[in-house]
Length: 477
Image (cartoon, rainbow, N blue to C red):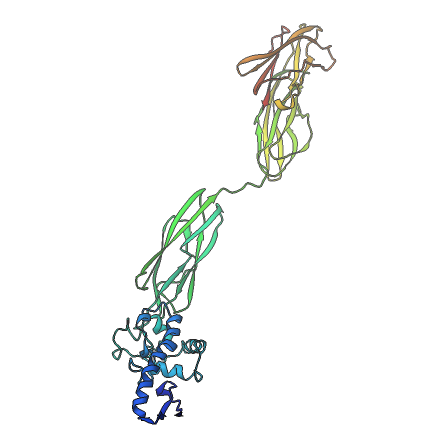
């Protein structure tokens, strides 16, 4: 028959181990001291697996992992002594006969405590992360412990984000903005000594704090960075941040951006030719010339046309029209001299934001008496054509008899493209005296090559003046 007598005393210094006063086994009496020593030896091994293993599982990154034993919580390695401050702190939140989960929960519960009350005020977790055991003070440490038992004076630790800033495409004359965060992830104040920019001058730090400045532990300061390109193209720069963070005294942030051209969002007119010179025109005759308005902008050009100066010049086309982007409109002006002498005027083309004057000039002369005087009043051809449309070029001639004798004369048309004659035609033309003018439509011509065709029309009527006119057709693919 076996009889056991237990008296349980849950005392903090025994780590929840029962103190056995007496056991009688087969009539043998063991002393309390001897039996207690035997049980404590077994309990120490049990404590190591019960308490040390959860600690190692919870803090595997601590360099004290391999040195963790009963002295995590006790004042001696055999676990027979009283609890150190860390062990006492954990014992205060443990239930009786705790499970592994409850031990882990207790370790987590006291991470924020300063169990050893050291002068630095470091929490248990800070000391564990410093590769030490938080139940011991420096100078009173067990052998084999790695690292300082009490972390030294708190230090600053800089973190900069991002380490590169790309502003992408920014229109010249405008600016792009971003920011760089300077964070202090250490435990002491961080001093930023300087913020320096190098590289392209297009980068700036608007509103940056004066240096040096302080970043408190666990706080951040945002530094604004601006990119304002002055020209097209890629720009690169560097923001250098100097601080007292150990090992990271100088951190560089790469800056980049690309300036792109300003998009013109307006009417951009181009006038060609910029002046109209009619030359000598016999009295009673009319000469016509054309200038072309092209819109090289991105908005429609609304145009008002008028003629000023000598009354001998008149507008032969619409007084108002619209030119869409990339298109062209012809403006025709007639010159009919009323007397002998020079005449001058202007074709005024008014746009929403400007007026462009096209100078006009011509001279009236007497017509020879008694000769045939067939003049070219107008000569027109299709100005632009595309091969893919397979449309013929239309050619029109208007003849006017400026003399006093009726008759006919040969008119010859020649078309030259890429240095070769591609089309010719001759026809007899005439116009009755006083009739005003006679119009002719020549044979149409369908080109088979790309390039400008220069057309020349000549009337051989034997009069002293030159009856020659030219025109151009642009043949696109």
